[in-house]
Structure formats: structure tokens, C-alpha cells
Length: 196
Image (tube, rainbow, N blue to C red; front, side, top):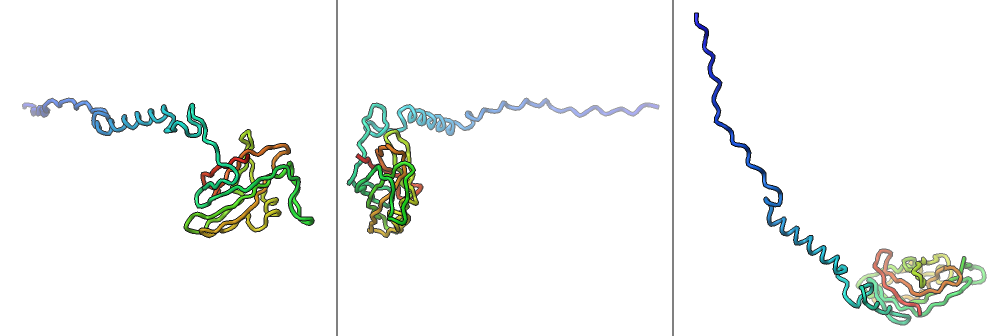
């Protein structure tokens, strides 16, 4: 009795090895070129100082522009500010029954604020900053300001209208204020006026 014959295994043609995959740059030549150009532009911008022009503040070898001073109108956002005057070395503010004593000395800055926008804007005294010659920054003394200049600590100003205000800063005795940084809101970029 003969044994049944086993069938031969099926014969498959040889399989070609998969083609090597091209790298990302080879498959996306246009994007790769654009990316390289963008990187080159960024490197050139940083190397040239980020676009600072000669003559601007902070440019290498540039002379800083003088800051506007007392009596010169400046703008930030919807407000135009004119610093009228300042007084340093004030020990206290207020009337006989309601006074605020300085920890160091008070600096009083008188200014006019005009709305140059097309809608009402809140004037917030606490958004303003005082700086000394060393660049130290001082915030508004809210209680002393309210005691001295009641009603304008936070005031709505309609377009075209203006308010006069006196802002009070409490700074160490002997501090000589050099400039005030004025803002139309807590988050605006601000503008600086020299107090000289």
C-alpha cells in the first residue's frame, strides 16, 4: 500500500526588499527650504539687534532721545498727559483732622489728563509709577492720594474731557525723583516724562 504523496509547498516569487524611505526633508523640499529661510531671517534679525535703528533708545552706539519734560504733552493709549509740576520732601498730606504721614517723604506730581479717544476711559492713579535716578520704581500711595486729591483716584473721563490730579508717592527720605511713567491703564505700555 503506497503512502499518500505530500503536496509540495506553494512556490512564491521572491519579494523585493522595501524601497528605502526618503527622509522628511527629501519628501518636503519646499517646506524645508522655507524653514531654512525663516531660520536665517531670525538669525539675521537677532544679529542686527532686533531691528533697533541707530538713534533709538538702547541701540549700540546710539544717543538716547531726550525724554519729554514738565509741560510737554505725551500720550499713552486714549490719554494725553501733561505733568504740570512736582514737589518732593513733603512730610504729610491732608487737612487737620485727616492726614497721612509719609514713611519716608512724599513726592507730589500734579498733572492734567485728557481723553483723546472716542469713548470713555477710566483714569486709574495706581497705574502710574515714579522712578529715581537709579531706576528704582515706586508705586502710588493710594491713601495719601485719596486724602490729598479726593475724587480722582479712579475716575471716568469722557472723550475730549480732562481732569487735573495730584498723585502722591511715598519714597525714602533723600530720594530724588527723575521721571514718571504714565499709563492709560494698568496693562498699557506707558510713556515716560522727565522730572527735571
